[in-house]
Amino acid sequence: MKKTQLKRFIIPFVLLLIILLPFAIPEKSSGDEELFAHNHLERQTVIQLIENKVDMKRFVFDSGYNFEYPDAVRGIYVTGHSAGGSRFNTLLDLVNNSDLNAMVIDIKDDHGYITFKPDEASPYADIGQNYIKDAQEMMKTLEENQIYPIARIVVFKDSVLAKNRPDLSFVDNGSVWKNNRGESFVNPFQKEVWEYNVEIAKMAAEMGFQEIQFDYVRFPEGFERRDDELVYSQGEYAESELDSIQRRVQAVTDFVAYAKQELEPYDIDVSVDIFGYSATIPEAPGIGQNFSKISANVDVISSMIYPSHWTNNYFGIPLPDREPYRLTDEYAKVENEVLSKLEHPPVSRPWIQDFEAPWIYSGTGIPVTQYGKKEVEAQIKALQDNGINEYLIWNAGNTYTENVDYTP
Image 1 (tube, rainbow, N blue to C red):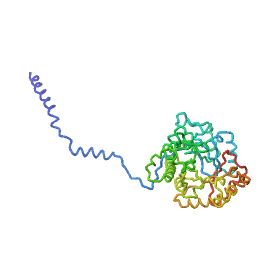
Image 2 (image 1 turned 120 degrees about the vertical axis):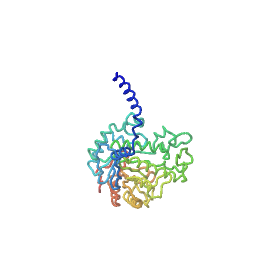
Image 3 (image 1 turned 180 degrees about the vertical axis):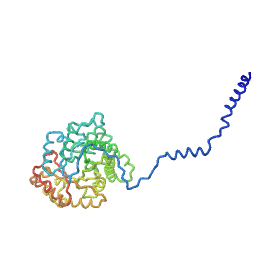
Image 4 (image 1 turned 45 degrees about the horizontal axis):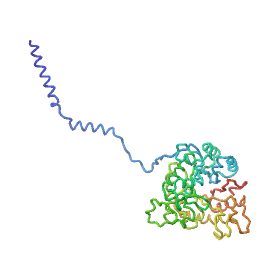
């Protein structure tokens, strides 16, 4: 009986303790809070300032190929057809058996086509041509022969893009404008055109090219005479306080700066082809080329200084095509002076001539000057005499003079 009574007493007592126990335990003290905080401090990540002298490695794309920059680039122009055809072996032999060491190969040609077939998923698949049938094999061959590869990309002369996107071109009476050779240009004011070409340049860099050479970085020749007749957008430049001439110069210069910046992660050189006469005047306002401003934004500047492309009596030379040494010498003096004024001048690598120009002799009674060993060497020697040791040789058909001394 007593045990039963004891149980009746204990059970209610235990239940009462269970109910009252939470109220009897004090809340967490400030000492506990300090303890938890102390443990957190022991585990936190230590952050230290990095000294400015420590170099931080940035991302750089690696194509997997190994090319060394030559002692001085001495190159030839190679079309997509030649690069992908039987002539390629002939050109390989020319370079391997001489002091030449580089090839400038068309990747986006004068019409606006890409000279190889990109992947089907590429936005450029529709403009790819099968001129270079195996781009990887071509790059491998260049690497094996240690021929420095330069990708030529024609920028604003682009009949293909102009036809497909008239809104990115110049319109005349409702149709895309063409020059007297049937060529169309796209609009340097349009940043979509910039992006279009720079993405192709990135593709070339990923293929293994060590330099991107942009050509036709300008408005059409004589643009200042038809500026008011053509319909086109000036994009963001429409709000500029600059006059129409300086807007063109600014747009072309800005494109070059944009391209250089976008290609930084690829650790390649950027070069621009430019009219030689642009170095001899403050700027070529019609086409938007300012020699100094473009040069300040590239690694290499390649002036096209073909003797045949200068007007009679330029530099006081009656017919420049007949005097390749004198023309090249006079030009080099001017260019050296202009580049010397830049804080960071680019490498000078002019285009020189290995072709005839019969059209300039029409009606003169003067025999056409034949360009051969003597004439090519004269241009190279004139450059060397002015401290310019790099050059590129142009022949549209890629038929180059034999037995030339490329380091006379």
